[in-house]
Image (tube, rainbow, N blue to C red; front, side):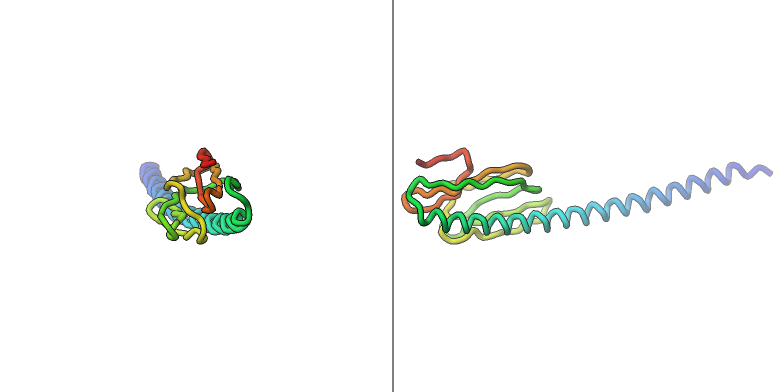
Length: 140
């Protein structure tokens, strides 16, 4: 008897099982990578908020039209929005969002977004107020 056909089917079943195991593993790893990326970017956003607070403290002692620039790289989309004392940096990865409140004393000139990659923003003192501006704006 010739069993080569049965052996081929068994190999195909074995290969199909391995492919399904690898596809499940890849999906799981993608979720782990996404969660790790979100955690790292959350930490970076928190550190950035601290830098803004320190920059605002320095600018509060300087005269009008003083400016301090901040730059960096973000792994996800950031948005700055709010008004009055409720200014937030909103971190977005896929459908997950996290809000960080900016330190008191920082106002927002206009809501704006930072896309994934390099960015540059500035704090600028205008009429005694400290504004967070997209780096292409200058109020003096």
